[in-house]
Image (cartoon, rainbow, N blue to C red; front, side, top):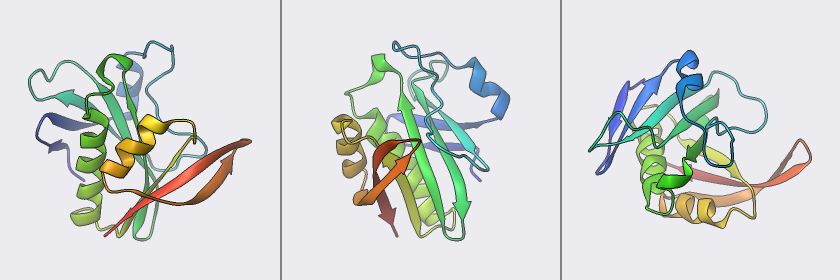
Length: 146
């Protein structure tokens, strides 16, 4: 598993579970932990701009590994949204798992009213593949396949 992944404007650094509590909260007061529902074997990455690797912009998670597939989640801190960082981070991590990580499928769930996230996932190569209900909330399932 890569400790560090680099894109055009971003660097994703793997972090340990205790570091999760050191990251800032976004303006809505929510933690950056992006998952909803059961999480098994999580691998967390913090997102930084290449220009200043001390400023956390958000984080990504890979979790619930199954043979040939993993689930993905992401959270971008409010001050960094609407600049394409979520799309780039999603592409970096999903491409890594589909090429080097031995997966043929990366999937995620997103709330239907979160149009910004849906567009970011589509730009990163994900396509809708169904719906799922978790804790009474309906989500759109999306996937990216090799």
